[in-house]
Length: 160
Image (cartoon, rainbow, N blue to C red; front, side, top):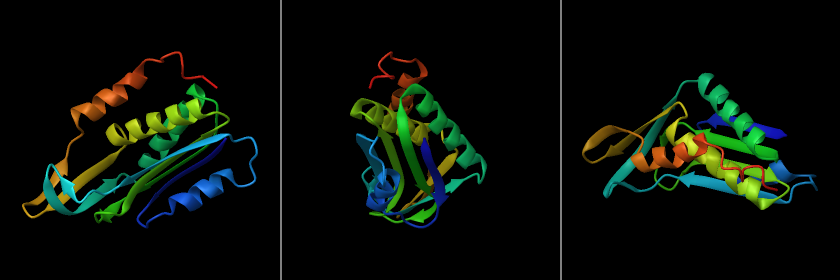
């Protein structure tokens, strides 16, 4: 399986990353991509930026472990995960997950699994900057519930 995991300050081109994942491949029948973009408001209040911090080395290893878990659950042919850190302004990319498989079901499930993990359990800390100051953001209960569904295999995970 072709795997790319990168943490970086600079922006990324989602279309170029998908093209790199599929270039020269005729075994891939589906690629599901998700790009997370910084919103201009948090809880209804306009924001100036998000700042994301991570633990270098550990974050890449943890994401890599979850990519391997996704590969053990679904028949994947490739995965790309790119997560930015540092100060990110509204409208800028934050994260890209691309999952490739022979069939769409596995690609959709793996991409969703990886995003649920990144949203709730990856070693990142997010601070929002607004008119009222800076504040650290906690994971939301709905995000935790979405991630918890992956704790028990559903039986459809190996669908092709």
